[in-house]
Length: 315
Ligand code: SF4
Image (cartoon, rainbow, N blue to C red; front, top):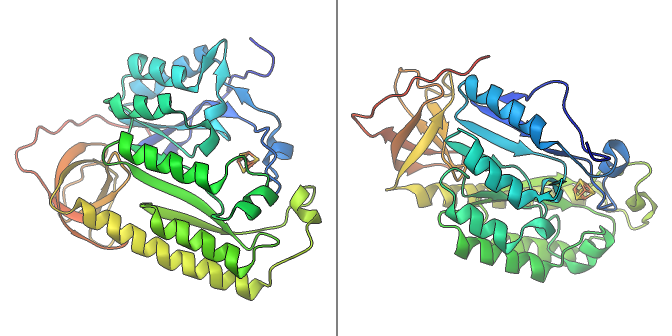
């Protein structure tokens, strides 16, 4: 084993019908607000043999979808295999209908990765790429490695390359020095780009991080107001994304149980889809025609006469 590579003594957590498969840990990027490089250490990659072992176990347990996770997943590197090459290997070797990449840093999303996602039948057309701020001055103070221009270029390329892409991002509000005008820049970029959802976080000072030394703290009332504006925008984005699904027939992987009288499933591009009915379709992938939308989910009905595959997920 190379120095820094790791194996996991225990196996993946389950996220209902999705299994989380950790392939990478640690981060060396040193964003000024982030405690992770101190708490989790430098970048390390899980050995391929260990990943393979877990893939076999998850397959035997009947999982239909796995989510690849890591702290800075795009930095995966093991024995000459980079992240794209790991994905190509999984595409061939792993017997899952769906593989999803969790959050990935913008500087690690290459043209090769976008083209691979567009061509793969297993990998989901879904990307969660943290932007954090839409203002270059704040991005510099955050010690982020992208500019807003490079971020927008990346998103535009991703949207052109991958049909039906589901796109999420993280936005931080109230970072020290965030003026009203820098926040307006964030709001403008987040409004313009066709995100399907936004994760909004208020800045939280972490002892030991570089941002703790920054003076211009933002009053909590302003932070709340900015977060609320972005949360309103998040609802608008979700509704627009769900509205775009109306009239389409999509594949949905169903969870167990009901909520608000609906049974829910998730599409490859991460739209949440609700259907009515009492039948339990847990861990089944079914075609659903979308007929309506809310800001929380799309609604539809199952296309009749489908062959139901009853693969079980171990609990
Ligand atoms: S925010 Fe992400 S990329 Fe930046 S230091 Fe933390 S884990 Fe690394």
